[in-house]
Image (cartoon, rainbow, N blue to C red; front, side, top):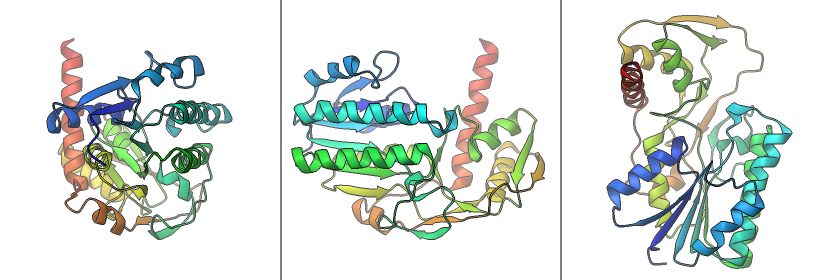
Length: 299
């Protein structure tokens, strides 16, 4: 397909959305962007979502970022709200097909407590949280839409995303950085030696941009294939702030599992894709956090 003239970003004011909009402004300044997010539009409400209808046609790429993070809770209520966003968007696209749909899913569809050191797009899904279940169910809804309406679909499955502007205190770079800069104590579960991949948000923005205009359709793990344990995250934080931090260990409440991704498909789809090394991404995040604190102090 030729490059569509319009890109609709749903959830543009969120953590990932802000970085994606900035990436578009830098790399495609003439592209028309249609931006929607709370509080201007609540996609869980059918009467508000229907306003999208007049803005979508076959010349539009829709990027679906809207969703409630699992850090805000893993409940049936949040599951239902995430599903409402997907079903409302699917209903609109069924009647007003877009030229392409890019959906941010999650590596949680593979199961947060499943040990696997060779995760590929063919790895069986096994979600164990309401968040992961909602993401996979949304993928299925959009895949049905693709078959029936001919809307090319890309489902990106990222691991934990971190970077400037992340307001969460998730167990990983974001939480460690905030605690360290506040002079607090970082908690490591067990030995902190379980493997995870941490994706810098700027890399995800670039990947979203690339797949929006590629000919690829299907599932794509948004991962470099390079995993780190939490002790490496801690070392990166200490290196970025220039001092040791206070750490305490607590016994695990769950068994230790490692997650490592195979990135063969990603590098085939985006051959020139590079990823920000963990120490560099943490350094950029620390600098942004310090700058935000400085400006807040002046305010």
